[in-house]
Image (tube, rainbow, N blue to C red):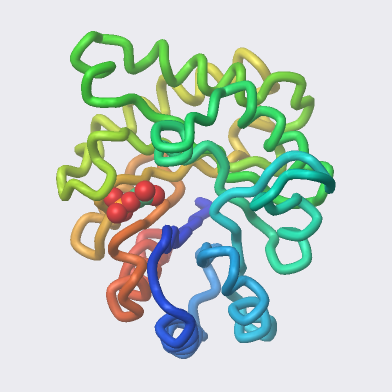
Length: 253
Ligand code: PGA
């Protein structure tokens, strides 16, 4: 049976009350969803609250980022073990981290190592910018993001990869399912297969991200190389997000 994973990236949105309302409502709406792995990634400060609301549910909690060091003089940072108290998953290398906060592939690789050591499943994000696509560099960029991001990672059984073309994030201009599949089933899978054995690679969930909503989710998960989605804007409304999860699940009925 095809694995389906739907992750919500709330980014820097919601106040505490809104976060509690959103997740309480999602818990109710998704109580019967069992086929998709559903992950909610709220801002750090809400993790304890969200984790306690979801602890008797079938919904997982994830963080949107973390630092790789375990402790020390890193003002403003959050360590992997702090995150692991409340989460099973962590988004790493999101394009906003790369472009706004200058995160390099090398730094992201250290975070991937630290996540795995702390039993967190990293959702490693890769994807090209509009300019890189126009210059014909998309495949090269993605190949590099994967090979450096996964450097010295021996086993990717506990890793997920999200393909998020930068030009599709928050723009309403989603990549066509065909284009997303071409990159995911093509570039991403072949890069992974050059690094790991085929069996291991086939078990790695590949998520598409960039303007996913309840109208287009089915087209993505129907593609052979796509297991689910990383959802930004459309994850901030409980009905819309739960519709995304249930529609994604309908593909494997
Ligand atoms: P979007 O964001 O769904 O709002 O395009 C996706 C993401 O940045 O993960």
